[in-house]
Length: 308
Ligand SMILES: Nc1ncnc2c1ncn2[C@@H]1O[C@H](COP(=O)(O)OP(=O)(O)O)[C@@H](O)[C@H]1O
Ligand SMILES: [Mg+2]
Image (cartoon, rainbow, N blue to C red; front, side, top):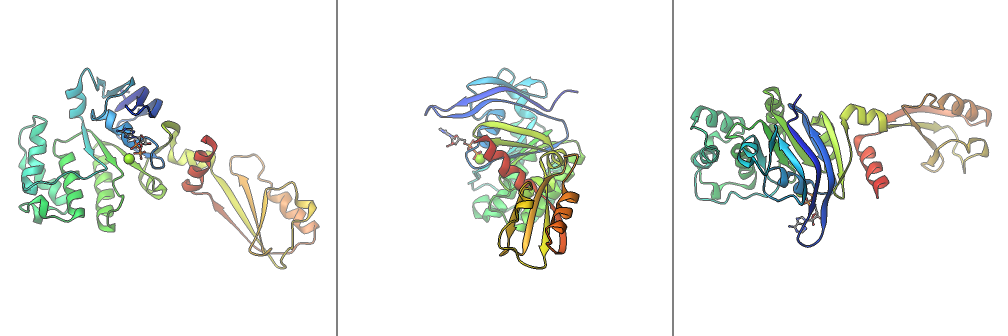
């Protein structure tokens, strides 16, 4: 199957001499929601800007549904809608005109019923005759999304779409993203909010210092890299860990009232059985037990630390 986007050995060295991307390889599947997760400065915006033709790559290639972004720029660009990280819609034009004009830029025939639907989906319909300069920041952001969708792109990039937006817009946005995915649109969003990736993505790519550290199904990533944590509440606080428990990865918390044991969910033996037996043998009395799966956040922190 042809990929929505195929990125091969993509590098970017800015004029300052700074290398923002190091030979990035990434295949983006048609119809998926891919979250690119990475700390500030990781290279997310650089990557998106290259795919959208706003920044020139230093080396490597990008194909958008088979079209090379440099040799076939127009064909590649037309497939893409971009909601950039920064707002730049300062104009005296009305919402309706601005969004309709965006569609025209791609040489598409006017389709007022589509513009109407997009504005309604984004709760912008009652603002359609308002001038953009007079809108609030949140409304301007909605306009940016409407503009990106006006030419019916098959691929939508959202660069940090929820940084600093209100809850209402965030909800509307995820609803819109899910609706678009249902119609076959491929969606790539960048974020440094892990919960966001956890909530909406099919696959997650982790990028750090210009390198993709891992890309995998969200569920696989959590299964493979996830650790579980067993918390043992003790009846009597311990001053220190007894020698007999040295072989376990244990932490003593809450002034000795709680033992925390981390284990690998993928491992053949979790070690829980023997730990409990050893506790019993050491005369440590257990009040309660509970387990918790590590979040994508824990995984992310571990990956970024390992890559340092
Ligand atoms: N025009 C530029 N010139 C020099 N360095 C840049 C430029 N744009 C971005 N960078 C640097 O490249 C790195 C990646 O930036 P960016 O792609 O914006 O990261 P992210 O979107 O993940 O926060 C950062 O260290 C940033 O300072
Ligand atoms: Mg960015």
